[in-house]
Image (cartoon, rainbow, N blue to C red):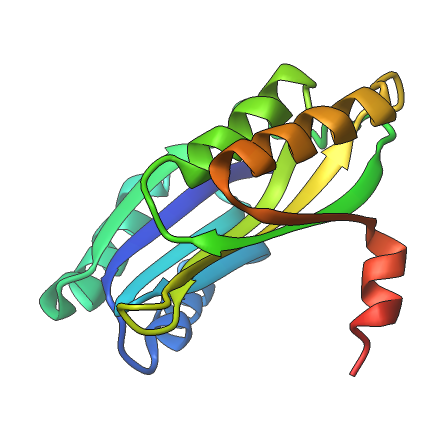
Length: 183
């Protein structure tokens, strides 16, 4: 079974996911994974799709474009290399939250530290909140820390960088974070 990645970008409106999933279903595709978000007024969706038939990528792309491009949405497809599921190394999941005055370089500063320690960012949400006089930049990183990582050195580096950037930072194990923030 062949897998493709479908990327859809453009102005948000109700019904985008319904249109995409309907077209994919009609083309004999199966949705395996979906990640979708709206940034300000822009929609972004990434879909991992399996296809029973080989060589239908062009037909799938044409069908999606016909339905989505009139609304100003851009569609891109690419094959998933090595469609077999890759076993991910065991890691510990953590949540980092930062809050501080909005300015350029905040995301770059924190992600640079994470990259130095080979930490994988699995999800990131970063938004400016507040008014012009008191605007804060809030970032929530979901990360996976490899078992060989020196946790204390990573924590020290993150807290040091956050201090230089003027950010309040919190690092919690995912399970603790979820227990504390349970609704």
